[in-house]
Amino acid sequence: MTREEFDEYCRGLPHTTHVVQWGNASVWKIGGKVFTVGGWNEDEAAFCVSFKTSDTSFEILSEQPGCRPAPYLASRGMKWIQRTGKKTLSDADLKDYLAESYRIVGTGLTKKLQGELGFLDQEMKA
Image (cartoon, rainbow, N blue to C red; front, side):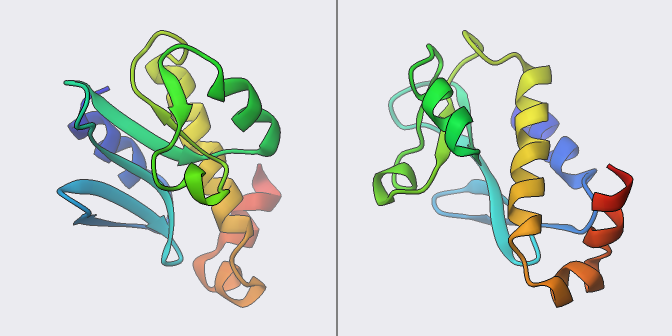
C-alpha cells in the first residue's frame, strides 16, 4: 500500500480528519483521536502503517513477520501494531484492521461526540 492509497482509504471513512505531523507522518483521526499513522520507517525503505488493535489481535500480530508492536505507542502499553511489510497482512487485510481501529477509537469517544459525528448511527448499521 502506498501513502496515497493509505490516505485515500482513510479519507473514505466517515468524519475522519487528517494532519501531517511527527516527521511527515500521515495521521488520521476520528473525533480528534488518532486511529492510524502512516509514514516511512527509519530502518526500512517501506511505507509503514500503525494502527490500534484489540488485545487478541495485538498478541497474534506482534509475532507475525512484517508486523511488530508499534514503536513509541506499544512501548507505553498501548495495543498498537505497525505493519512493516506484506508478509502477513495483505493490503486488503490491512484495510480491515484500519476499519477496526477506526471503530475501536470511535467507540471510545464520548457518547455526545459519537452522536454529533453520527458514529452511533454507523454502529447500528454495522
